Length: 569
Image 1: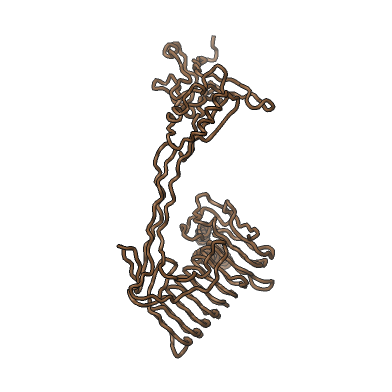
Image 2: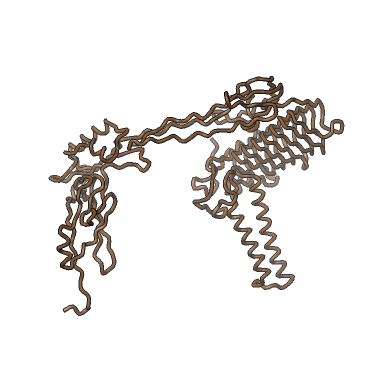
């Protein structure tokens, strides 16, 4: 008599239709017994519940059976079938105390196809004597049934047949087919038909930098062919091992931008000069032809401020308090002292830049000899040839200092890479070297930091003056403002061409969803001595150099969480 009031469940066990056995595997000296299964083909029944309806009438239930990888149940649910050819495996999983143990049957495929479908491998297991094996199977047919029809290696196929025929007691995995990757598309480009000379600080093939002076003021004639747009050249299509065509990634197209007396023809993709003039190339994006204006002496009270819609060549210097603006390239033979210079193209200053009120702003590259207490804003790269002394230099692209250049104090902030020689001294104020950083965002970062400090001071002052409670509405509102500012600071992303507030954590944390752009490729190279106390920033990470070192490269760790340095090659 059942005194518990419950009836014990009755289960019908599945009938297994494949053989499993522990066999010796491996060379004699390292042989060990492992569990292997006989080979089964796609569609073969692995387990079933024969005539289950009769057992169900007697109160039986099916023993828990689950379809694992590459298996599925028949429509009536009584049979478990193999979806692919391979080697079945039985696993068990304990369930609740009052339930029967779950049996899971999976298939380890004979043909393993990589997720990208570009490679297929044969996974051969040791045969069980007297059971079904690969020895009587057509390997080509099995590959075709698995969908592998392209890139089959006939030599590998023959090696596999030999391995199978020898009935080895070893596991074997060999690549049997490789797809053909699509060809790389070539990006569109501008090919210049005239010699425009080296760009300032151009990188050479051996990794060094070409610091020859940039050639500007290149004269062109009316109707002269300046450059040609080379359109995108698509790569050849690829094919994966399943025979599916893979289209190549599209190359990057460019929009030709011309200005002033330069013209572009969509018909023959040629850029020509409309009038005689001087060529200006702005960041390899905009091509201008302007007239050349020459000022043989200084910019002073005799000339007054100069605003030119042309390329401008000043043989002398720009005296304090004066302003110069040019639409084309600007070349200054002398120095710039406490003056303002703006240019919609490239700037070359043969002398120096001095004075706290001195500001140079260019849409493209800036090439200078030295700068003392001035400011440079460049939309391209900046080249410094001898010294940067307590100055602020920002560049959308790279900042490159010639060998022997000394950087003392101030800030060098590059959206790209930063190359310097000697940085700092035992006595000068701390220098900031930043690479992979948007200068405007860094300014916002510092502004938010100052705001938070001031907000916290305001809370303390309010509580002292009015003996305010930390629970008052005014204090709660002020604390909410601090929290909002802190959240903005944590989310602010300093890396160029990323979302402004796309970070998920603070300066010492890393969110997998954080936008990082190409920050893993950014470097700060020091071809000289960098003194202790120098501040280093790459993207959203920062550090302070704790000891004086020489010839070092700073970059981010692979996880992008912190900055590391290594010997400069």
